[in-house]
Amino acid sequence: MDMTIHASFLPHTDPEATLTFYRDVLGFEVRNNVKYGDMAWITVGPPGQPDTSVVLQPVAAFPGLTDDERRMITEMMAKGTYAALNLATKDVDATFNRLQASDAEVVQEPTDQPYGVRDCSFRDPAGNLIRIQQAN
Image 1 (cartoon, rainbow, N blue to C red):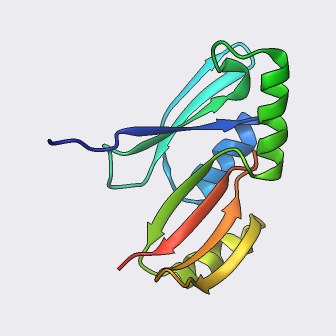
Image 2 (tube, rainbow, N blue to C red):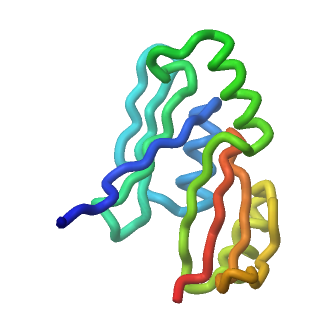
């Protein structure tokens, strides 16, 4: 089987703050920014990896959800318990220092985990957990 991950989806609540975080703080390329009314679907990805993307979509656009379900998702996002993205970098400590200097919300400083990786974590503006691991 020949399969790759093409796109993953994360919810967002503020398109401008989301765009700033993924483009200016993480350094991702903006691949698409589709607006429909007051909603925006923003597709970003790591430079040099055009086949891997993250689509940041408004919670209001999730099909088939009730108002109560949307409210619950928004509450879980604010606590950082709804969605996550794992990234890898060659130097997790340098990446941590750069992100911390940007005022990104730190969840965990670089740590050697008992399961064999060194990683740190942040929250994006919507509360999604961004875990960054040391690439081997």
